[in-house]
Length: 301
Picture (cartoon, one colour):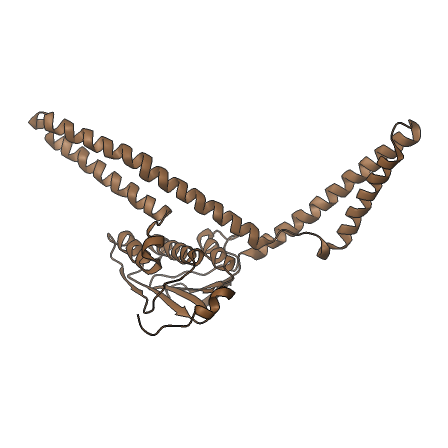
């Protein structure tokens, strides 16, 4: 069975280093051009104070020195940038969820009330059509609520990670033939919010991929509180696939996003799969230093 450990920040780091060096070169060229122009103005027209020319020369020399000492210059950290991107993504998910639930949901509810009012006053021969319309509105409203819950799992804060995952699996797999199980034999109280969100989103993406591609009959999701961190494993008995070494470059964007979420918390995501062998995804989210002392495993549920 093939094994692939994904680290989503490597390409981002190369990209940032390339952009940083390019920015230094352009800045150096700009300073050089400005210094040359000011020098010519000073020599031929005398209208530019000497101190301005010296300042431009100093700026140019400073940038040249910075280019020779890249280890001492300020660098954008790939993890910080990726963390910001995920925060923006979560904020946008929450906004869309609110719009679906509050705006579109309310409009559909109002349409349902109007349809009920029309049905009570419509001739008998129109009642079948009214019933069909009411059914369509009910189904659409249910779908909107499901999508809203997927975009923003509000129950994470109130119910916790285990209950939220169980509710998601119940809702997502209700109309499928997949037999699923969620195993969690320890209390997950005190799990940091960012860790719970990452575990939920990774499971969400893995289940979506399974339904789209795996043709699986069985799914097992396991959460385990370990001394080194929270372990998440997701296994199915589907047709499997060949994990890419660089999933983002090879079109496996879902896998790349899952790896990025794990790496942002200092963890790692591995994918074991091969054609005809099913898929096993494992993620480990390490405890933060301040929480490591409270991470002892309780043997009692």
